[in-house]
Image (cartoon, rainbow, N blue to C red):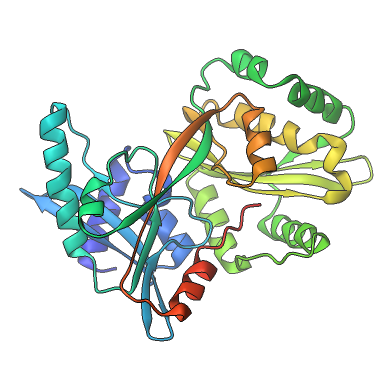
Length: 321
């Protein structure tokens, strides 16, 4: 590991405000240890800003993007208690330094964590932005209130599923991946992340008590649905869900979300469904009494070539649902 990444690793070990998907251990698992790097801004031997990125090289083009299964990246700025005007000036200064520290690239595309609400310095530097949305239960401290906030339909589904399936935690990476691959094939779709990547995430997450699988089986050992959940001390993330189309109406998927929330409620503060721009999925997330939270997808192209546009689309293609 180079000295910059070593410094960033040390920062991630002590700085709770760095989102999970920007942490060094996650990037090692998702991108591979050699396929990501980070820009660091230091003052007085202290890191005050950072921006990790995954590196892809395709047909002579350099892309700075996301690793698989990584919801957000983007800049991290050291939390500050400055008043607003000074803080905005500081953000401009630090973001300009982060942009200047990026290596030469043909395309940059990152979705930023919703805690980043100011992308204006990137706009001034020629970047573009699209607003996307995630759906968050922002307080897990009162589980009775959380459940009461679910729609009547979701509560009904949960109660129905409790009578027909058994919930099992910690199914193997192999079983989870095989089931996801199979359920996608039933819908004429292909899984878009390799098993090796998922296994690294699974193993790294379990080693840090920051991940789990949850599955629902009926009395004939049919797997109706499963989730892969990851978390840090600030939020849990519904990273991957697999639902067998044959059992879509069993209510198992809703039951698993409820079980996941119960499981992580003692470990973190929020539950992030990770959003979706797909209308039926968005509708389902809203029924869990979530808050709609906007976040930024920021990009910049230094090539007009059609080939790179196709590469970008492929590299950023969603895998969750």
